[in-house]
Length: 334
Length: 258
Image 1 (tube, each protein chain N blue to C red):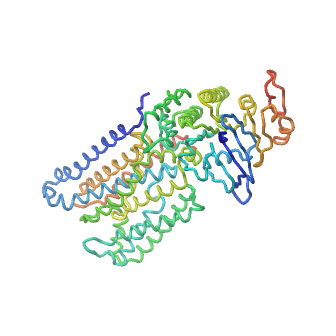
Image 2 (image 1 turned 30 degrees about the vertical axis):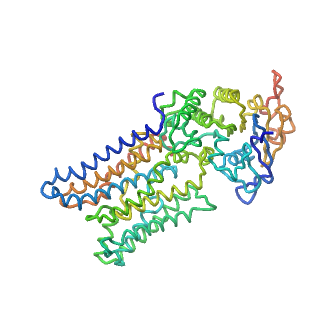
Image 3 (image 1 turned 180 degrees about the horizontal axis):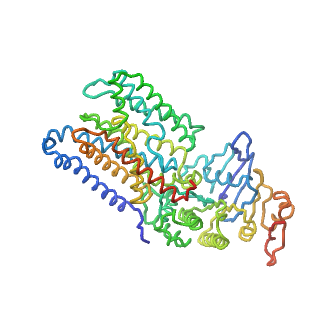
């Protein structure tokens, strides 16, 4: 039979291959691209290691985290159009960050800003609210979760717009810049470390849950009959993926479409088996955002386009392509 | 004495305020082949969901192979009982083999396939004649081909109790016959218990050793097919829309539209 079984050896082989590709992209985007395109400035070793490298490291953590969370949300919600933001995480995080901006508490404390902490609190608050709204007797139906997420997203977005409307002009600029999503240099190493810790811990717990995620992408009776206690497993996978998302967006603002696009591209390449999809999407997401960040710095040099704009620009058309393909495949029924 | 394969004792369960099952009892002996019949809404699928752990009973005991489902870890229960659903929706591009491999989930640690997993998957693919779909994407397969993969998945799960929830309702008459043949082959291997939920009365009456007829959450008839298929039971459950005709080959009577 053509497709060999997925034992540990094959898993490692495939994951290491993807890891090597990611390493190549990282070196290319973070090291070679600046040197080739702008020899005057970025060849300065200190600029490269102290300013560029932390920025690209953050891009890798955020990109990988968002892609991984996207895979989890899509499988759990049985919805290929789900992104890490569907349950209100990004709106909650943005509200937190914006409150930090307008109240002035984002002043630097010990070399780092308090804004990520506010954003993190906002993310966690939003997820808790959505889950609370959709849950009954320990179960949260998929449709209700999605609806609660959409409604919380919309309400929080309105609140954000209101705060933006009444804010001082210079604050408005900073709010809008946050909402664009991107990596703002200089990135403090402590920020990279915190993001890496948050994303890393949750990702490590989720990375090997692919078998469970496969089963959970089936109907509840099937998943249950295949040995997964559905309600309990779904709750902790939701929270794990939500924490990854929170850890990511708290430092960069909402970077769009990475969590939606990357899982789909990787599925086109290797198929839908979540045992491989999780690690490969993580690596592909990291590579994608590092590359996008590299391009965002160069396209309009010396201006730096926020990378969130670039990913959304690339993501919009891809999303439409996806929708179109979905329509063709289902004959327009779904 | 061995524990019964399936035991429901004094089970209470309902979706809203109205209980569907109020003190429901059913015991199925290990190694038997039981057909579960009943009109739509009788509680057949709910019974299946209770057995595979998708619902927890509000009261009473649900046990598989002696293990009380309320206290048995889900993964352990899944090694005792496997389910073939009516159909399934694959939202994502899985290959045929990956679908069958999901049946090994309760036997795996860490999601990797061991040599034993590989053998079980290959055997299930061979028995159901699905090896030729192993590398195909499931969304390029027909409904009947996908249903075969669900059978293969349940077979790969290698449980002693097999519950089938109207698995043949989308299949043509030839495929339906295949399903009964696979079940016979599995039961010839080692004693396995089968609970087969179906609307196909005539076919199940020829293969099951016992028929249970459910209506509105209660058992209205229970026994060997020839005892259960009587005018009295038929009239009670399906009204005057059906009639009984003697089987020309001497088997249980045939149920036909009136």
